[in-house]
Amino acid sequence: MKLKEVKNCIFDVNGVLIDSNVANARAMAEAFTDDAGLRKRIAELYLTLTGIDRGTKIRRIQENIICRPFHEGEFELRWQRFKNLSGNGMRGARLMPGCKEVLDELKKRRIHRIALSNTPLKELKNGLSAHGLEHRFEIIRGGGDWTKSESLRCLLEEFHFNPVQCLFIGDGKGDLAAAGLAGISFVAIDPGTDEFAGETGFDGPYIDLCHWGKAISLIQF
Image (cartoon, rainbow, N blue to C red; front, side, top):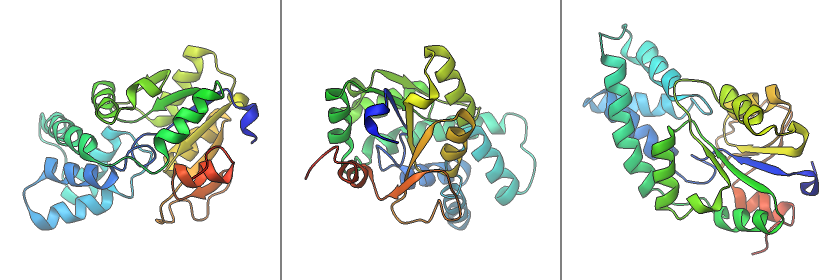
């Protein structure tokens, strides 16, 4: 897809704009247990659950590693503990290379910049603000206990966006699936995890936004 055809550029946040995936994995592990061995297993599983909403991640960890149903109120406890821990992780993580340069260049080209994340809105805005990114977006939408596909569908309906004029940039197969369901072109970001091995229907993968920006002559370094 040629950039001149794009009017709305949609960004996943964790792993695309902010290098917070590992920090979030550690936060999720801490939200579940103090046991070092279990924490390691939880963090490893978390890193495979890309582009998936928070509620599903918690449920899959409970099912595959804790291996028992939630006690009453336990799901909500995990959610709240992860919320507190991941917020600190996002604020402390580094920006991905090329992040600000790409966002600023898109503004010059009058392309709307949209942040669409599985992170709940308040946490998301706090994380973006801590990195000087909040004002670089025309639209910011967070997530919750629903899929990225649902978030993307709601975004398109709310603003009456034409999917053929949108571009979605993400780092997970869940992001790719959401883009496919919505009929939106997708750019894959993968720093070397082979996340998109065997997948089709995307541009890339690119190591980071800097790599993508240079590949399409959007930015120069």
